[in-house]
Each structure stands twice: as structure tokens, then as C-alpha cells.
Image (cartoon, rainbow, N blue to C red; front, side, top):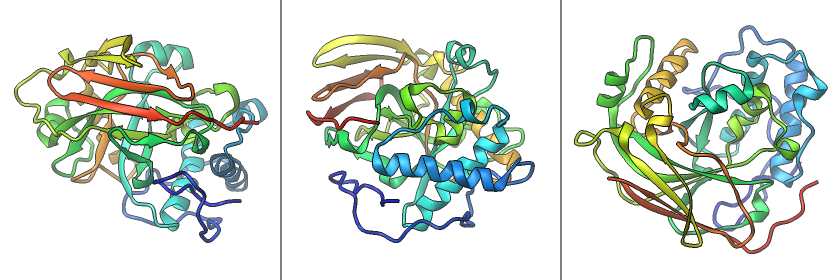
Length: 302
């Protein structure tokens, strides 16, 4: 199993092999109670880890193991987040997925899911992303919240989430799937860290007191041509409600959000497939713009 890509250039750098067991930490995304089969979790986590490190996708987990449930998926996710931490990455936020009703209907669920963001995933505005470090990337424009104080459930409301947020930044999430051909069900995407890839954030933090987050619109452009638009109300009616949901979910698992954490609440538009040489720009009302650039070559994924 090879080691993670260097965030500056995507090259795999030398590092020790990841451990075969979770590493304890203050913000572990889920406890292990109720999981089905620890040996199977380790095997599937190894597959996804290898897929990420070699850019070679694996067959859908749910096709091979149809009895897997959501607890299994989060246990698999946790193993690989612990591996990331063990090789020096820092957990600095969370992403919330499946926050729009259309996406929930596609996967047959009635609530969101979440994944974990580490510092290796962050890309500066306008920097070139090497496609060789990705498998089958797609992009989504969405706001990125920065937490001003710790927040954990139970009982967190949208209003409570709003008062805990320091501000918002324009962002584009580069989602990616280690599962072949994006043939995912809920368990597949959760096990795969909610299909996390990279995150590009703009350089301006905007306070949110003076405008309605629900009405913030975004236009996504490729090479200067608008290809999709949306309003942030698509994320559970209010993206701050996604933060409240996440804080309550984490609280039920013995964890929570920390001051300084970045939280992605979900995209207000459809995912857009990335092609070599693409340049995307996301323009948000009130909070600014961010640009994402991709290299001109991509290796073939198995």
C-alpha cells in the first residue's frame, strides 16, 4: 500500500505504512458500538485506502456485501480517518452530504450523512490540482463555514448554529469516489468518507449577520461560461440547519464541532464532471468567488 500524495504536487511521498487499527483522538467521528464485523470493516477499509493511494477504483461494497448497514459504513470510514491522523494529517472539519431532497430520493434516505476533512484535502484558491491524485472527480460550489466556538448536540437549533459560526467563505468541493463508476448507495459513500476529495476555499471570510443564507445564490462557470446555478436554500432549507444537524449527530456519537473547524453544508446545485484542463469559477452573492484549476492530464482509472 503506497502513501498519501504530497498536497503541493500530488506525488506520493515516503511514509510508514498505516496501522491496522483505529487511533484514539478527541474528535473521532463515530464510536464502534453496534458494528457488524470488525474483520470485514478492516478489509474494506484497506480496499478504499489502497484505491485512494493508487487511484484505482474498487467495485461497489454494497454489491459484494449487501447486508452492510450504516453503522458498518461509519466504522469503515473511521478506520481510514484514523490512518490519516496516524501519518500526520489533522482533522480540521466536516462535510455534510445528501442535504438536498433530490439527492436523498436518489439514494433512498431521509437524512444527510457526513464525512471528515483533513488538512491534506485543502487547496488554495486558484492553485493547480493534479488530476493524477484523483480518480473520477466532480465539482460542487458551496459555502464553507468556519466555526467560532465549539458546538455539539443534543438540542442544537438553526439559530444556535448561526450564533456559533464565525463566518462563511466561498468554496468548491472536489468530490471523488473510490467506488467504480460512481455506482454508490448510502453505505458505499459513507464508507468512502462521504465521497470526499479536495476542497478549494476563497480568501475572504464574511460575517453572516447581515444577509439571509437561504437566499445566497451561486453561479458555477466552466471556462467563463455559466453551466449551473443554485440557491443555498437547497441545503435543508437553510445551510445553517445542516450545521445544526451535524452538531446534533456528532453529539449523539460522543463528539462535536470545534472552534476553527470548517463545515461544508452541501451544494445547491448538481455535481459537475471534471475534464482535464478545466477551469471552474464559483460566484456567490454576498460572499465572493473562488477559482478551481485542473491539470491537462489524468491517468486512466481501473
